[in-house]
Length: 96
Image (tube, rainbow, N blue to C red; front, side, top):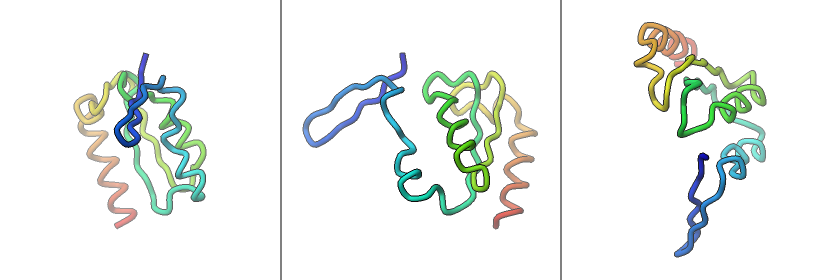
């Protein structure tokens, strides 16, 4: 089971990953203010893919999710280097 450790002052609590809403601030503030490109592997056992999918679904005008089948945590480039580099270049050319 994935967990997050939440530290407040000298105390900390370990919670199941499903109980932590890492994107709550985005919802409170109306979503991201700038374009966001997210590469996320479906084999990621550290950060659940569902969170990125929900982020992209909630803000389709600002968030582009590139799903990398089977890639683990931070493994998107390793799984498909040409796709990763091409998508990143396209995104940067569009927004910079």
